[in-house]
Amino acid sequence: MWQEDRHQRIRALLSTLQRVSTERIMSDLGVSRETVRRDLLDLEALGELRRVHGGAIKPGDEAPIAERAHTRVKSKIAIAKAATGVIASGQTLFIDAGTTTALLAEELAKLANLTIVTNSIDVALKMRGATEPGNSANEVILLGGSIGERSMATIGGTTIAEIQRYRADVALLSPVGVDHRSGATNFDHAETEVARAMVENADRVVILADYSKIGERSRIAYCPVERIDLLITNRKATEAADFPLLKKKLRKVILA
Image 1 (cartoon, rainbow, N blue to C red):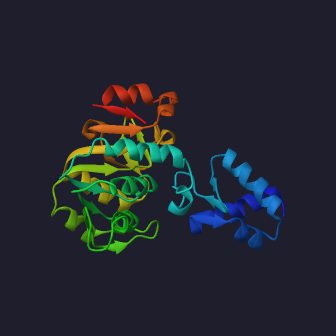
Image 2 (cartoon, rainbow, N blue to C red):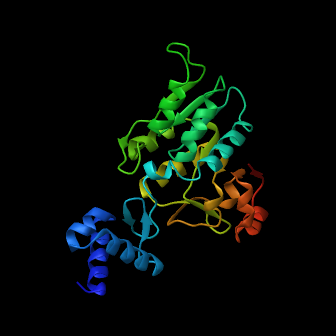
Image 3 (cartoon, rainbow, N blue to C red):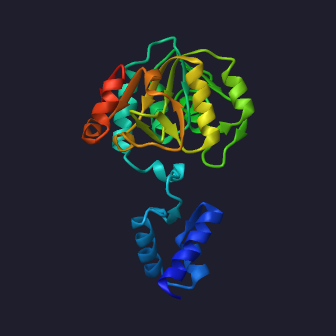
């Protein structure tokens, strides 16, 4: 099979499946793993896909949460530890779903007298699992709704309606990207609506974004720069071209 024919078949698979594994391409095209690797490298260079562990996804999409959980872990832990420093006893917190917020939950579980309202099953389990049964130091409220396909989190109209019942002191959110024009942005529509509702019902908004997200913009904006009270990121973020403009618009930045 000619190279252009292979590329066209890979494009078609991605268009249909959104994400395609190396094994699926090998099977459908009848080619070797090395040939698939070269083709994916070529198509990534053209901006037509993004390689991820085990295959490829459409450009602009976000890698699966199970894969993201193993990337930039030290940077995310540093952000999570820094975030605990801006939380006070007795506060009610909104926390959305993400790998950074999952690490945040592990740190918050060491504190006491907090009310955590979250759509993330992972966050809820980490918060509850850190204490002895019947001796929870924090109240954990898992929002109802449908479980999303991209992550173990609730989404949809029921989730949004439940968020409206609460007023949080702080919303701690982890976007796909944050830049000086669009603020915090996400890829998935349903997850974005949850984050937007949390922003609307919180007194303060804290954005947790590792250095790779600075200056990045995904397809749906949910929190303008002016609404962000605090950005917690890594010192390496200062190397991003967008950082000076972003910092100028923000009220406060913490470099972890």
